[in-house]
Length: 242
Image (cartoon, rainbow, N blue to C red):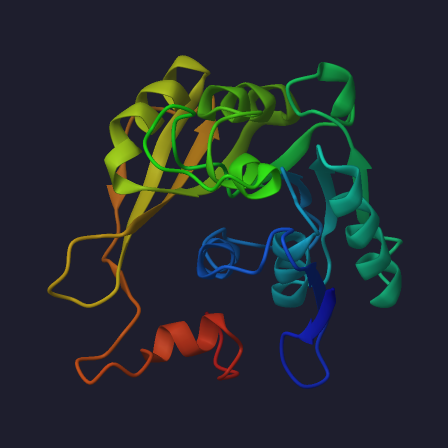
């Protein structure tokens, strides 16, 4: 079954289907992390049904966004979402394997984004459903595959922004640097101030100089359990700029 939802009243509509990439908090958090400006050429690696691409365009409408996704059924929904939102002049989707050089557009990009699989293929209990397994585990795409694709697609000085698990941070930093993507900005995500991070947001720059800035944590809940003001802004529940 398909589900169509609005980001906010009068905003863009996104789509998801049962068993196929349900919307997650990590995509919303990642969409608010890149520093966007008009005219950027953006590549969404492993775009699913286009949620992250649409979130970026909701935040900055003057972007050119291309999504690449392995699963044809997800690409079909993403293309429908682009048409539904009348964004076919700036939002494009391609079916293909990001490990294949020919799957990526030839033009260089200013920014790449990715919400990659978090867990190694042999890393513990994983969903048995094939589509969920592909989304959560490095079955069809590894962290190194993502970094290699970003390196090929980005212009010199272009940025890669992604979200991942803290326990994979050492792997992430090493693989980025091995692929010529220098980690530049890191922000932990914590459910509450007293808790350890559950996610990390990271920006790397192709050809960047060494030097990593660690930003204050993004906290999701106040002591009473209600969302923080920043999380409300990320979910468009407040109109204040991010």
